Image 1: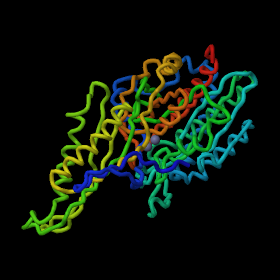
Image 2 (image 1 turned 120 degrees about the horizontal axis):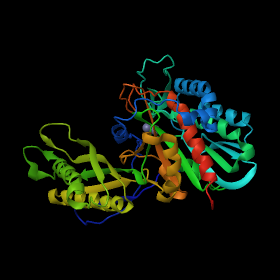
Image 3 (image 1 turned 60 degrees about the vertical axis):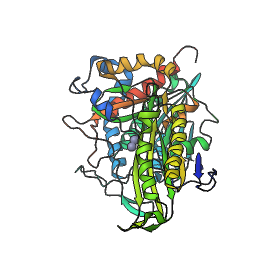
Image 4 (image 1 turned 45 degrees about the vertical axis):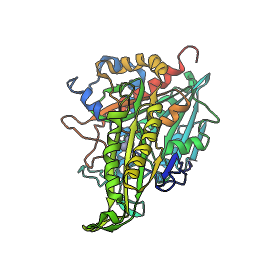
Length: 459
Ligand SMILES: [Zn+2]
Ligand SMILES: [Zn+2]
């Protein structure tokens, strides 16, 4: 399980301007996804995913079609029984039983708390390839009206909350279970090993995300894959695929600035030092960093202040003010530069009002980089499978902890269009749902990517 990590806590004291470090505040809940840009890229294409001539003759597509009703049953069952991050006990048991029934060579449970890993060795020698699905749901009250809608609740941050698969991870689990079925049937001709990773807590938790937890438990120690693939359902034309090479999802860091001044009467502000005004100036300065201090031709970035707390009465200058926010970047150097600038701006604002600023930055998920070389090799597979429904994805300003795997091995993360016809639904919304005909497409995509990777020369 990953430790909470501190990047930088810099305090500038009005007396000595000295910096020091200490432990950080609570970990942010990173938002996976929100591949909203993808929805835009898919407008105006073919109206629906229909069975093509290629599908009718392709053995993988045929195998996926054969298990479609089972995919839908799995997805509905998981949807009706959603579990929050690191609480995916029922889902993990369902997955592990399925892999054991398929007579996988290894089925490991409890990896990264509730994660499951299945190892499928082909009869022929070859490289290792990994496929990943995330299993966790969100604290959202479902409002889909589906007959298999969730009524589940769970404890989250000390509160009882409703739970819903509002990000489509129910579909991801069903798809990867389906790929396990399809690929296990081809074991005799499989040249290499397929690692199936069912990870917990992609949406994060109070102690980090599931990818880090699985890696910390030695996920890649025994079998280091030559590539890892994952897909995420997105609000785009069902059956469409969305991919971009290079930086794809943003890093997501949290910052907090605490201004410590001296409270006084609002009618006599000169009697103290005004933390509120310093914090207000810091908000404007921090949100101007991107437009004034960052070379945005290198990579885009975002800083948003999300909370500001100070004072409790109209005629008291408050002693303390606190603001928090999020930082999204697509480049490691830009990320570091922004961290430094937030600290500098907060310190400058503080000193101009004679107060003390303490800046705390917590690193969340890193930039998700789709390996360009792997992408080049696998693009023909995506083109063959999706044809005109293959789109270049926009960057996602949401974060995705697949980034941690992609830091260790070449990774490829793809959006799978799963929007019901005539609807525009967004992940994390209470009415989010998917078109279930996209499930078998997902099975074909993951299965075929694995097979084609294993068949690449020189692996
Ligand atoms: Zn999500
Ligand atoms: Zn998600």
